[in-house]
Length: 173
Image (cartoon, rainbow, N blue to C red; front, side, top):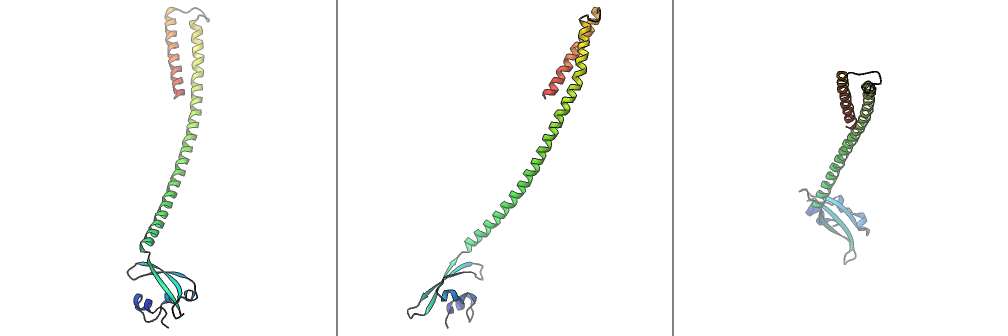
């Protein structure tokens, strides 16, 4: 039986067929494909195609296709895809963390705005009352006011106005 004689002698330096040469399916009319790695690291795709010799004995045509570059590229693509997935997972985690931080800041902002509203109200209420009383005194509703007292009350009114403007600016900010 000379099945695989050249293959096992030339490629494998063996005296008998290796597992690749025992191609029952190819000998029975079916094409087979296998992968083989040479000692130098080159990778071959071997296509075993059945045929009939002139003497009507079955034969197998073995086609060796060097796929070393393709396999290296495929491995590199798998590595890059894994790296891309890893980076995507990292970025997704970072985005989730940033989203949590943004939500936390938005909540703190709402609390601060509420606090600012309370502070503004608590500061403006007594100023409004004080301004109303000073205005009543200056207008003579509580009795006569001397010019010297009127000047002092005008200063108080201007100071209250500037405090109200400051509180309004604080609320605007």
